[in-house]
Amino acid sequence: MRKPPEPVQVIKQRRDAALAALVGRVPYIQYLGVTFDRRGDELTGVLPFSPKLIGNPLLPAIHGGATAAFLEITSVISLSWATLWDDLESGELADREALPKIPKTIDFTVDYLRSGLPRDAYARARITRAGRRYASVHVEAWQDNRAKLIAQATGHFLMPPARS
Figure 1: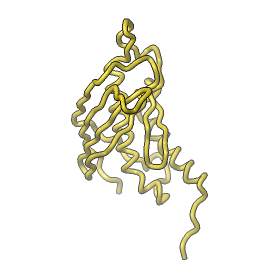
Figure 2 (figure 1 turned 45 degrees about the vertical axis):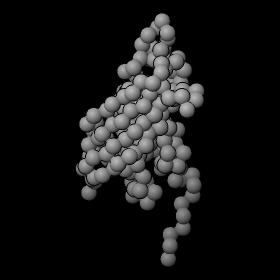
Figure 3 (figure 1 turned 120 degrees about the vertical axis):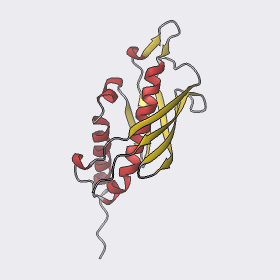
Figure 4 (figure 1 turned 180 degrees about the vertical axis):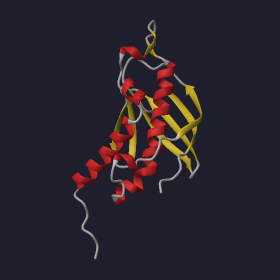
């Protein structure tokens, strides 16, 4: 006999709590103010504009380091999110301690395509390869128009050991 499906609100709360716990593990995410918009299994990183992000006040333009950090944060959180998705859906992820460790960056190459203007930025990562020990991610950032990227990056990550 099959167990009845969980109410949608319970599933949403479990997903939101897991995402908040993942994001809460990295203090720099809170410092930059990065949040994530979750739609099913897809995450969009949001970097709200703040004057502290300006690198060149004459343009003004968002600092390249803030842009790169935003891209890397989006990559790492998206990769972590994808690895725990099955456990979330099965209800096996019971508490914060059960969350996997954050993947470690091996290398991260950023292509700056245009200046980041003083406004909110968005990023979405696509996992191109995910194995037990290694993963490769491509991430793109934009502001007002997704077709006009401000930066893109490719990163390779060392995956944490699987939970037992």
